[in-house]
Length: 234
Image 1: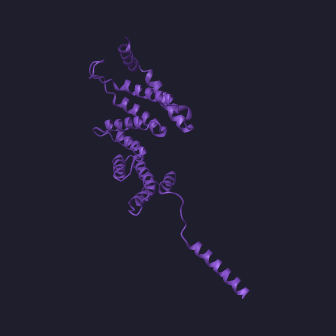
Image 2: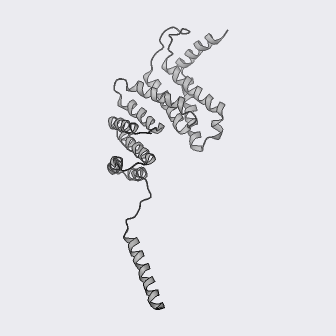
Image 3: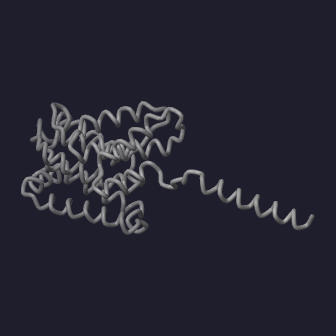
């Protein structure tokens, strides 16, 4: 009886092991992580297909996983130069209930800036300005947005409009780019964010500081700043 019990136990254990081996392997990677690995291997088309399949699965209710997948898909389109599809993907994402990703807004700004249709540059500028103002404490978002905003303003290069010192005066974009970057750095220092930033974020801050320094050496910027300082003097 004892021997029979031992045999039964052994057979049961073997059966359980065989059943476990027959189960499909559960991949711990998220779809976004799998897509990143595929892209690193040069398999962008496979990454896109994987992400599209995951997003189209209506049974998925994991907002975090869907957010990562949408961001990864929009980035794939943006990096391949398909700005319209990147923007459409972002639009689909923001149509989801609860969707709110600053990273997706950054991708949209890149796509608008690169696409270059009428009004796209202004749209990209507004997005970046909103991220700089609204996500200041999140350096991984606000610092790249500030860099992009300065770049886009210099690209637009709109001259001054109106008479300085009056309510209808709009400063030139070259000065505005410098002033926004300079104010951003001052805000970070005042809040103590520069000291507590991670090494990666400190590199982003340094990039903004370098851009501000280059802009500040421009003769046009210096001339405009001189006019503003003259107005501020009693």
